[in-house]
Amino acid sequence: MYDSLAVETQGPAVVSRFNSILILLLIAPLFSHAQTICDAYQSDSSASIFLGNVTDVTIDQPTCVQLGCNEKLHVHTLEIFKGNPGREIIITQFNFSTGQLMEKGHEYLIYAQPPRDNGDVYAGGAEITEVPPETLAWLRAYLTAPQTVRIYGEFRNVPSTLDAPPILVTLTGTGVNNRTLTTTPDGKYLYSFNDVPPGIYTVSASVPSGLIASTAQGSAYDWYAHNPTAKAPRSTLTGTIPKLNESIFSVAPKGCTKIDFTILYDSHIKGRVTDTSGQPVAGASVGLMMRDGREPELARGRFGLQTQQQTAPDGTYDFARVNPGDYSVVLHHFTPRENDPYPPVFYPAKSMPSDGAVLHLDASATIDNIDFVRPDALPPATIHVLVVRKDGSPIDRAYILVADAASSILLATTAKADATGHADLHLFTGREYTLTAATPEPPNVLIPATATEPETYAPPATQQEQPVCAGPVEFIAKDGLTLPPLIPDKTVQACRSAPRPMLNSASAP
Image (cartoon, rainbow, N blue to C red; front, side):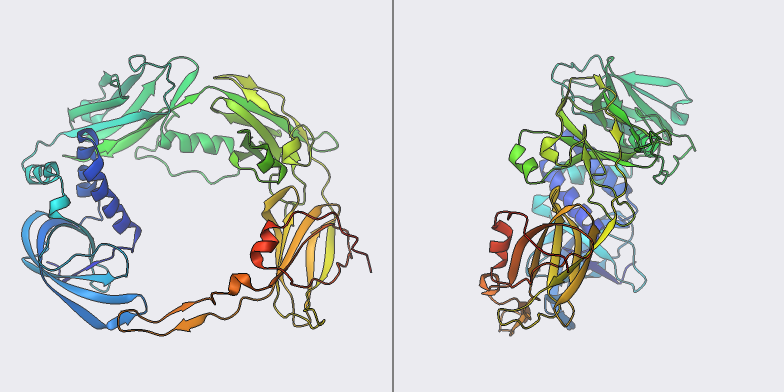
């Protein structure tokens, strides 16, 4: 029996999960409904599930902070589906200014967690008027339900040309004495094995040649095989490493498990990385970018990676099971840094993403020999910066942001000026960089509490309108370079939207 329960509408992840479950119950079709409520019931986070009526709400004054106060909800238990919450319980919820709270005089379906070390128990609830009738019917029937289990799921990313019948789903395991059960998904690519005994199972799927059915569990091991420096995933229940197209799991009596498959193409973009002497490079980062026609974004150094991997000991890499489309490949997509002082190289041998070759990949095709020669490591360079006001006085703790020209959204380094306005930037010789500097943020303003709102803090309304930013300044790094003094004369927004300048004539000391 729990003496107190605590409800958080914006608290631990499990509460978000409860809320998500209850929202899903309102919109999900009947096919997925049983899975959702079954998962909620089986979850260790659901120590008790019950219907309760809130009979009183009081404020716990000692707990009040800026954002709100704890509220004590006196709840009368009407019907218990799992656990033993007791006849009368107290639920504690934190009253944020936003979020849906339980209210006096309302009835709720409540999912409660196990007690924490301090005795509090967090919970999530949905008002009974919003709970689908099938949810209550399922909960009421559970205690007398058969001991059998349900295993089902869906197929995603299915090509429009693939009909459901060519897909075959196979189930085997201890629950069926290692016999093999098979089924095919329906027209919506949903499959189900109903009323099978509990046990340890393996579910797999076969699809036509040129395609692959991938599960999340098998994909984890497959990804590890292509990233040998990564940490190995946890083993399965039986110690067996699942294949890409299978999943291994245990189902308790009256349980359920949903295993989804993603249809992938048996395609590859692969190649090899060597150094300037022709030796293979192991552990080099290679990234795959999808080209979607937004060339202006690439020209500004804005590109998004689909995936990345490290080269094998022989220098090879292989992007497998890639969807059809146009791609570019980049070696060392991050900006040069201390432990990886190499510039990005966009295939075949370009320094900017917009200049990289476009590789068109057809369905289930292979593009090979996308090879790179990694350039020599860049020598380090120290750049000297001074941030001052218009009158020449130094700006203490000015923020300095430096972006690599190959990717304007990836910071090469950040720094703070000292009391004299000086800062040293550790970059790499020969690289092109863009720099901005900003004054320290003004102190937040205290907004006093009112009769209805607690006190809070906020920046001045005119902060974004003040001239607090200098730059952008563009330069090619060389060791010992000193940039002209930076004088904040723009708003932050003006700095961000300013066009890139010509390379300035910063002089060496």
